[in-house]
Image 1 (tube, rainbow, N blue to C red):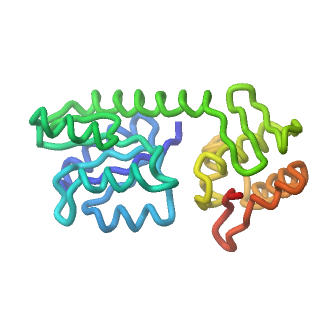
Image 2 (image 1 turned 180 degrees about the horizontal axis):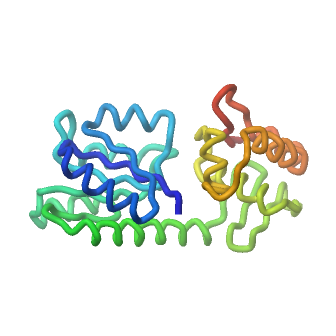
Image 3 (image 1 turned 30 degrees about the vertical axis):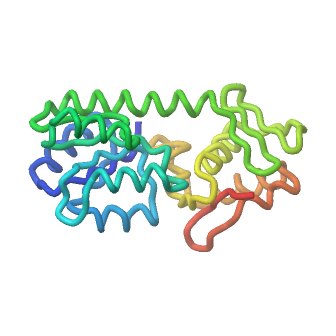
Length: 225
């Protein structure tokens, strides 16, 4: 599975409990005890899903959710709110602000893991059927087709996956490690240089549109027109 879940909660016991169950289910987990450290983390890395407490010591979780859903590069990340605030009005407000699910404390860790899986499946389903347009590049995830100015481009499976990942969040910088994890997870021993070779071949096949793929020195790559 190898998906990264960001867990934002100021209760250490909750972070430890949830992290343990998610890791047993095959997820990677990064825990945060406050909003500041979490938002700083988002400047350099993008999780696949966010579990967010509403009552943090330095911010309102609802405001954080609202911020995420309005920000390019972060708006598509599923958010599950985990909170002691169980009033119906709180749930409605959270969902209206863009949260994908709302779980009240106390809760079942196993149920939370199940809901995480459901939220990720829904997100993946959307990605599989939604065409992505970046400048002259059109990506059809459902048909595994890529075209530039209407002309179909033949890509290898790996090249297609890299392009789709970069296009999923235009302008977002993906590290080499993130790209490697997305492609192979822990199943294959590869080096950073492997990504560079695939990017070089991808640029050549895209022709003039290859310039959309930009190298961010020392970090990784991004795609923007």
